[in-house]
Length: 318
View 1 (cartoon, rainbow, N blue to C red):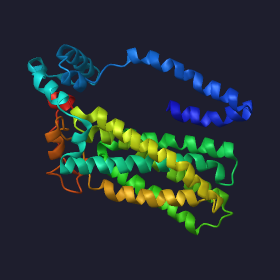
View 2: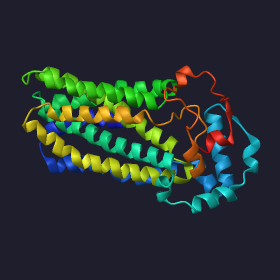
View 3: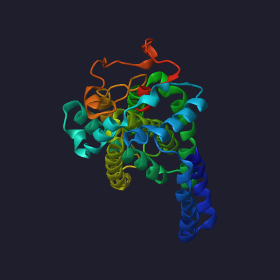
View 4: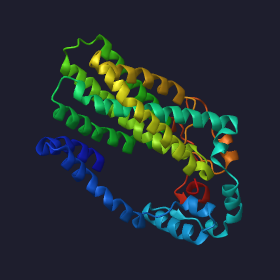
């Protein structure tokens, strides 16, 4: 929410200052406080377990269970961390590509991050090419992310992770493709379609981060997310070149984004659902994860989740 509020205010700070140097100082200065926040954020319980730091993990999980109003399971007291630690030390980032299913999931996620980052930042940068007031366009583009956050907050546990990505990508793709038949002087229509694409891209952008962390095995999660972040950054670097296509036609960058997002909607369907599932911890579990799932798997249609209001080892180490 802080990102949205600042994004909506930033154009008007720019309008008031009219000095790019001062703008850079004002927008960058708050970043100095980030290192101070590290002491306030606890380590991941699963990471602590893989490092053999059982007491710290148990203490943290008791706090989590109390805050989430769950029952703490005493099975944590008997956890054998040596096996977890050995598995963690014997893995490398290349293990993401050694087995067929894990390799497939990793490559699909990599393409998704690349395209989503590219399309999101293309939409953001293209706000100045829609024929409307650039300050208004940037403000509207930021504010439409608010309803997207509510969809994410209340929808992803009901619909799961996969289908929100698929449906939002499809809708964003349609919003982009429709621009082909819109007259070039229809600035307000262009803006409306761009905002629809922005709100759906926001859903995909946020859900795919959570989805990726759940799909990757615990022992490879940090390295896997670093690789996916790299792929996303490469997509970000491509976005200015796509925005440059607006010199040919104002809405063309959104059309290109629409085509790419159709691809994402298609390939995401082959990924397994993670909601109400025991998530993978080891490389072997990552390879086997989702083998028994149907392609139409959806939490809202599956009443037999088997999950209880208990903080268990499997539920928390993943």
